[in-house]
Amino acid sequence: MKKVGVAILGLGVVGGGTYKILAEHKEFYKSNHNLDITVEGVLEKNRGRAIALGIDESKIAESIAEICSNPEVDIVVEVMGGVEPAKSFVLAALNAGKSVVTSNKELYCKYSHELEKAAKKNHCGLFYEASCVGGVPIIRALTDNLQGNRILSMLGIINGTTNYILTKMSNGGASYGEVLDEAKRLGYAEADPSSDVDGYDAAYKLSILSSLAFHTKVPYTEIYREGISEISPLDIAYGKQLGYVLKLLAIGKNTAKGIEVRVHPAFIKAEHPLASVNDSFNAVYLTGDSVEDVMLYGRGAGAKPTGSAIVGDIIYCATHSNFVYSPFENTEKAAPSTKFIKNFESAYYLRIVAADKAGVLSKVTSVFGKLGISMSQIIQEKENSDGAVPLVVITHETYESNINKAVAEINSAAEIAKVAAVIRVVT
Image 1 (cartoon, rainbow, N blue to C red):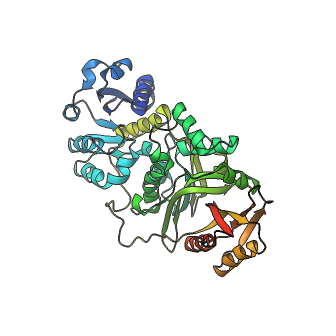
Image 2 (tube, helix red, strand yellow):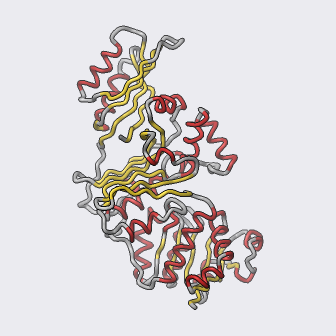
Image 3 (cartoon, rainbow, N blue to C red):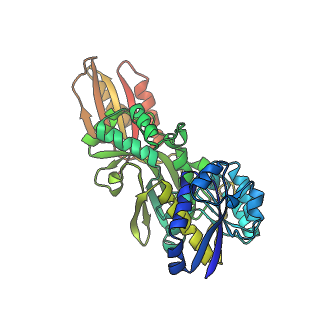
């Protein structure tokens, strides 16, 4: 039986969950994987938290140097989050010859090129399944099972906080602010939720996933990003009326013209499989040239779902001595030959507040016609008490630049009509 020593850096929600899984399943791993996995050290400022988990005080390290110098430690698990000191600790572990398993999407997204260089130099494993989509095995699917395909596109709901907020807004009609406050009380959102609600978390994950899927470095700085804070229950309701559900989507496309990567709220048809992914669940919908459509679905966060991915990486590391790294040249920036599409094509939802005057609709359609924008669906409501007439339009696919020009031109005559909302539509 192979003995495997593990050290855990950080015993928060995910670190604590990982420790519990390893402790509870110890005999299972012995009998099924022939592995005796033992936690040989933890690095945690709150010693009381470690002791409450059942960790012997002798296993609580005072510094990363103590972890790195421990000959019983084979694999270091980093679940601290953030860039520093996590980056320094991971590099120290790799340079000490320890393989690393991390759940840190920001660290891996921004510095995987440095971490991988150290891993290669020291013949160590570097595993990061838990960095994207919690317990859903998306990394392994892209690096192993789907390697026979050219991945053409991916659509993902890859942030549980925003999916929870949009689900509650859709089901109850509450405002963004009301649901965000509820999400904070329930622990679904951080006290500072900006990383989630402004789309950074999803952009980090999309950078990792699209790099693997498209076999080229896709830096997060190349990803168009837009959050959900401006979303109104009114627009969600109009979308429902037209047969759509609103989600924060991570979108990646590998086309003949280049790579398209974006994170933003989008309407998706109610019958699409992603439309029924609700609350804190996540899913990624992939299209390969051979396999066609595949969807991976599950818990996108949480102690045990994320811990499950971490333990899976520990077992994989312990049972594979031939470590494999990124299937592309992993550098800080994209390769010069990689082209990114910024002026992407999409359908669009626009809510226009029009004055109750003759010729307003013809003015709007004239602006659209001049820019080659055609309409596929339209709702024209009766006049409101303030004299405004709501006009809701969904266009056929057009370029982002055309929509921006149309919005600017309509808004230039604000006394006639004003665009109150623009949301992209996945057709």
